[in-house]
Amino acid sequence: MAVVHQPSEQESPAYPPHGGPHELRKNSLGLISVTFMVISAAAPLTGVAGAVPIAFLLGNGTGVPATFLFMTLIMLAFSVGYVAMSRHVRNAGAFYAYAARGLGGCWGGATAMVALVAYNALQFGLIGLLGGVSAGVFGGFGLDMPWWVYSLVAVLLVGILGYRQVDLSAKVLVLLVLLEYLIVLLVDFAILGSGGASGLSMNLFDMSAISSGSFTVAVLFCLGSFMGFEATTIYAEEARDPDVTIPRATYLSVLLIGIFFVFTTWLMVAGVGAAELIPTLQGLQDPTSFFFELAGRYVGGPVPAIAGVLLVSSLFAALSAFHNYIARYSYVAGREGLLPAAFGRTHSTHQSPHVGSVAQSIGALIVLAVFAGLGLDPVLNMFTWISQIGVLGVLGMMSITSLAVVAFFRRHAEASLFTAWVMPVMSGLIMAVLFVYIFFNFGDLTGTQGGTLGIVLPSLIPLAAVVGWLLASRLRAANPKAFAVMGASRT
Image (tube, rainbow, N blue to C red; front, side):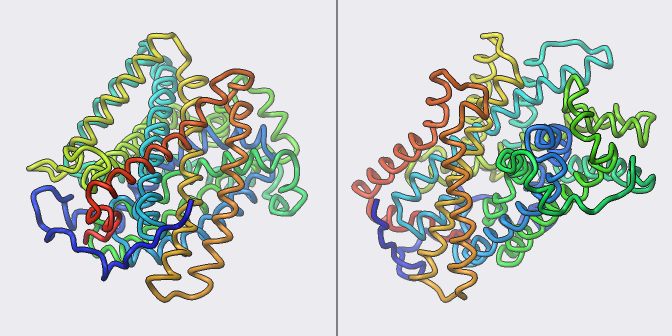
């Protein structure tokens, strides 16, 4: 596919004047709000309780803290070009906008449809995980209900928040994420203060630890803990002083997520001792109870039970964050001619992308009804099968965005070799390799090997890209002026 030349921001036909009836709510989000809305998608407590024990067990064991450090550096490398381009392209379409301005409208269309499939997949998967976790947590308090009831309540609450003003969602998410950090750090410092099971060794960061076990599996699980950090640019049209807020929020999100997981995984290893880490995990009926075992051992009292409740709120925060992403991508796709125009309208009072929000909620209810009706497991099936589609899609979009950054700065703006070439190329190649690996090993990663699901599910991502490319081609034929300004700045 050839890279299509796009006119620069100055050459592009202008959008209608800002301040119209169907724009997002301006100046409604500050640095803290944007940062925490993004971190909420990464779901810190969900990562600690869910992804990390599996990374220990199936990945490289005591090398996980170093693997998180490695992934933090990779995400920072990606952020260099991503942030630089955010100063030139301010559009709620994020990955879509960058692809459109850097590589051309057809690439933008392909990326927009991949984004909708990927973020919906992450959302649908988390709905199942929340239902399964909630049934276990609240069942311990004597509140026994089917998992899908909890999922249904979450979908409805998230839909209400998404329908209203974005700053209402932000206030809820900031509170929930702060509580997540607080409970994990309480356990962390309890381990730190006690010196752990056999001392606080720092040799976890040497090469022997990194190369032990499966480094690739560890990378994949660690990567999932960063998922969503890239969405700072989605709020560019609603942020106060976006030229300052969005870059700072991006770097701050990566550093907060990365440092938190490096610190926490190091202390989780110290909590049982490096030599006993794998035997301890193998001895647990459910490896995801590892963090709660540490909480009971080092803090005790009501902390493990509180952590269980906060795990549910962590998942709810992630659901709300991804719902906001999907609603905004739908809004941009409608506004710029890829989807029906109704998606490009905002609520007359809340100035929220309410059509996309409602459509996403309806889709979530349908998927929930299918999995519940077929009696499938909310975690092993709904979460594991569907969420990996989202990880695959985000990796693909990050690869395309890295290429778009290089192409954009070659044509439209001056930037250093480091910013416009070295960092985007390096991070883009790494993301592309991971994309290919997950695509061809999807069945092994999700337990769908040997069946059609292992082929059909990952194929949804390239299929979405083809559909988006065709929609953009149709727009080019029907409305060349609209095609010319796909992804252009809106602030």
